Picture (cartoon, rainbow, N blue to C red):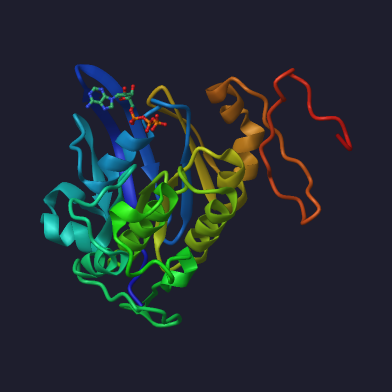
Length: 270
Ligand SMILES: Nc1ncnc2c1ncn2[C@@H]1O[C@H](COP(=O)(O)OP(=O)(O)OP(=O)(O)O)[C@@H](O)[C@H]1O
């Protein structure tokens, strides 16, 4: 099996529209980990992901993939190692779901229709059913709902042979059950792939990621285990809310909670 990718950002600064958007961002991904990137709107999550994907050149600093500058890698080689799922991904063509997935495979991978267990160069490839796509394979993208299209887009990204997945809000348009299924699926790829996922639902992020990175105002405010990040207060500061872990009937999940509209927690039994 090929090793999961190691990626590092070294003192990355990005300016967009004449404004600094990322400030001196340094972050090392642990090979095979799942890292959730969280932060308020406009905090720089998409920009950071684009830099990691090599889609955006930093003004200063550099990006290393397996200890070599990403910028030195030919675009085609980059695509073989890094699967980047942009926010609100749209295909140029009105393909069927199966065709879109084949397009992903065209980046050198092998999608296995309906087959689980086998994989791409040793990496397991989830079957379409893992994204609830098995009944949608012959449907065209324009005829799908937003959430169905989002799941097809993730399948496209996962069909690549990449060892690093950069997924920008893959759960944004999904219902709670599909969002949970996607996070569980990404978590199941740990070890074989390094996964960075931008997610707005802090509960999902904290419950599934090995580590969480909090961006705020283009700066990295905290990075660490969900428990440590929650305890650091970085999320509270970034969002201006109060989050805390709660015990659930299924165990001690670090679920993020915020006050209700009145500023009060919901009363027991309400
Ligand atoms: N092309 C651009 N030109 C100028 N400013 C930009 C450009 N793209 C993004 N920005 C600005 O950069 C900042 C970071 O944007 P980015 O998309 O990285 O944020 P984000 O954390 O992903 O936000 P969201 O949660 O809303 O998706 C924002 O203030 C945004 O307005």
